[in-house]
Length: 492
Image (cartoon, rainbow, N blue to C red):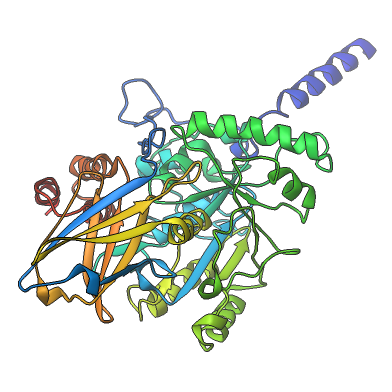
């Protein structure tokens, strides 16, 4: 009897230890599907497409040739990069900490017009979440809200620019490799939708294509008060990011837990160039910035509720532009109230409102400001009715947003017969602005491939209205060309 009792104890202990490395989302046994998870079924397990960051253009030079209907003198014109992209009047940024699963199925999904995982519990206890593979296979929780329109502002020329968040990542954590169970139409239980330990790689890869920024947060150092240990793990984490995200590096830190050791370590890690924290920081007043902000620890706030953020926005917008702070907030979990807040920003200050907000990731803002400080804009005379604008965008290390807005004073849209650009310019739009025109220039190397991917994705299922909206969105980022026209014809 004693021997039998010992065997039972050992079996229980082995069972307990074998569970310790499993992801917490799995739930009880019984979550199996006798139909869909077999070879030869219609389940799509393929990896998401990812933009090729490995050879992104550096030190881009955009050349724009403008032909007019009257004589024009280059020396009478002035080119400048405005304080905020698209000539927006205030800046908002959002960082979601702790590498959370809901940064994908709520925050990112809401912004990009996808189904959204509701924070209402389905059984009075559990909220349900989903991953990229579940979204792709239309295997979604019963509490999921249907897809609506995307959220964003415009580029000042009538084209949508979607909001973009910063997602923190913890690449050393094994749970970023957790698998996804796909059991379409299986309703006996919903364990496959229980919250995972964090964001998985496929989710993050999907988010990257839409402009989501990256930030280091906690690393797996044995002693997070030891600067050398944290620094060593920055290198380990960066190596994983580069391998998983097509050569992309992370150049931002979102300080975890108020631990300033992370900041001192980041200052010794050249890849990190922009940082954010709650204390010991520099408050960002965009219209006062006259430096490139490299290695500056920028302030963000964790406010108690979305209503508090609304109040702060309204307070700042009542001030002269030079006195307006950037609305930079940190969040952890995002629930339905945060989804309503994002909708509120869109409806009041985005494309459905006064179109005054620029809402990029901190990485994109950092790069744009860098181009504003270090970039060169020249206007050359070609003939009496032709000028050439040359914009040089000197990149820092690990730059992935080679794009800018340039204002040209002294010329109007009605004066222009045609505008053309060099091959380095992949995206382009322009419109009247103030006493001249504004031009939005994008030099991303693989923008056509990105747009083509989303057109092809829509063509595989033309009943998916969200995929159609994506296809249109990415194609409209391109400069006018026969390629753009052909892609649009495939969508409309």
